[in-house]
Length: 86
Image (cartoon, rainbow, N blue to C red; front, side, top):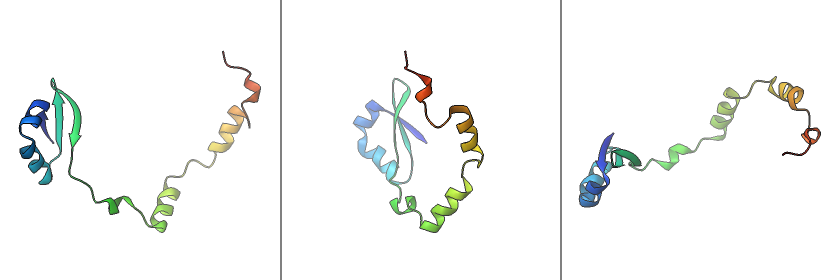
């Protein structure tokens, strides 16, 4: 990833955008600190999954089946018994 100072971005916008159009990600800095990134657009279609792909992903990353029992043992069904806060 390249970097460009905010002043250089202002003065050379077309050059920076040309770099981005060619696929480079560019970090914009102010006083040496990165404050933003400019990146080429992504293919929005790639962000969508078919239903079968989504279901496979959910099943693969599903929480531990015993988690619900553990949480119930720790907190119960409600928090009413905790009383007022403060």
